[in-house]
Image 1 (cartoon, one colour):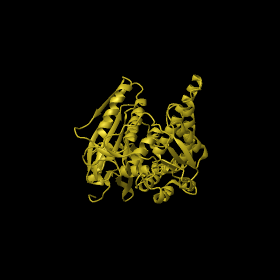
Image 2: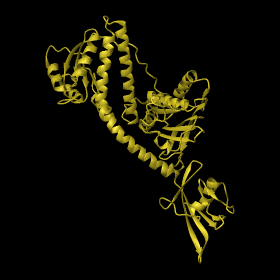
Image 3: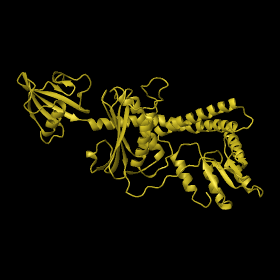
Image 4: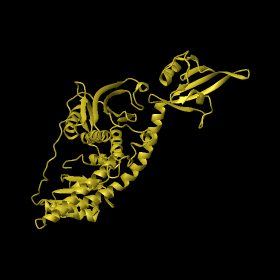
Length: 461
């Protein structure tokens, strides 16, 4: 009995625990807070009388206790014609069930993600055309104030649609991350300060952390989105007020079997927990909280993309995300990100607030979509650039071969028929090696980004 990895109990006909192995003693304490020699009538959420019956589905009874899942089976030991005792086998399957649920979830997200990545390119092109034309129209001096306000609404709603596409790409793990070594403690502290100023006074927001920095290799913009999404969900779960606690700590995993969540590899990790005292998540809802477009909020109150986006961002950082919740007892999300060696994080760059204007320089625009090409041409002209345009790389090379082209910069799409942007860059190495090139793409592909970076390893690109 002692060498069996599962828990083993021996019950008599009265329900008394006659004997148990070491694992069984541990499981018994979790399931019913009993010891060998005690009479038991319940194991977790299952009555012992039901345990001794054939389960309705499969050979095992599924039993839940203290947030854990057990598979339990009982078999009688006969004494002539009477059942004198029962052997009970208990298997703690919490980790394997979590791994199975995560695998199924990944399959669902992968299917939707493939669809999202497939339409994102065309969708981004359409939104870019609308946005550019609305912005240019809004800058027209002849436009009436009423029409200018209407254009501002179009710009605002187009940017909102662009953000929805970005959320879809986040949960499908197709976003292009801008990762760098950064201090997660500084980022969370900044966001908590903002939440303390913007959340209702009935919600107390606090951060607990150690003295040391928590360095991770991550995209700060995406992690801010994670913090904001979790905070908004927590706020909505506390309509009458409560507490929202962020906690940062370091975790060292010496063996995968001892990891606090399945799949957490051996090594150093940064752990961020986000805990609220809200309404919690119902058991029937919990398996679906990371599903895209799934929401329990009223129509118009949520898109169902917030937690799906969080899940995708953390997965794209090779991190892990778990959730613990009980109805009316609050919810805790725990994020694990791989720690990096202690060193000075790279400083953040501040984006310029005003677009730089040209002084008549000529740009060669290479774009196969005629509607988008026209919109970009108009935008570049409005910024005082002269523009040559081509529908693919082959035509662009012919234009560059002209002695009067006088091109200062090539701005090229990556994915085009006949000759794409990367093939164009390669062809330019011979005769136009010093001509600067900017590659752009609406395709959310890390592979494209990586190949562009390799193609760019030459002067001027």
